[in-house]
Image (cartoon, rainbow, N blue to C red; front, side):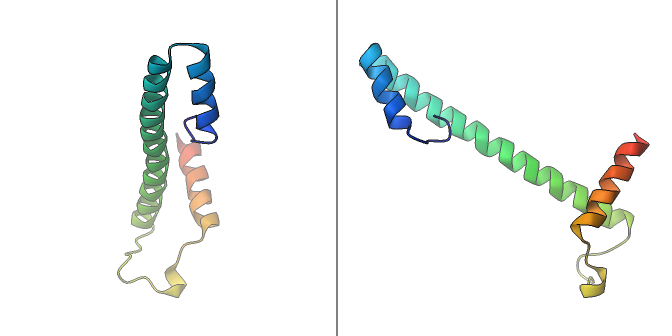
Length: 89
């Protein structure tokens, strides 16, 4: 229901089985709060990845303003840095 896939079927089943007003209020709040939570989780994961890339660039002294095609980082290089970072901890 949080992903909004066929949420109306769930809402109509709730309305048929209990008080229609409380089922509607519950469904609306679940969709609003659940969607807000889901978006925040996705944004947190994206921000964490950008932070790791930034830390990697700082460590290897690559400035984004002066980088050209020879200084671009691949995903494999970033992943290897993350593995080394995790092994140090």
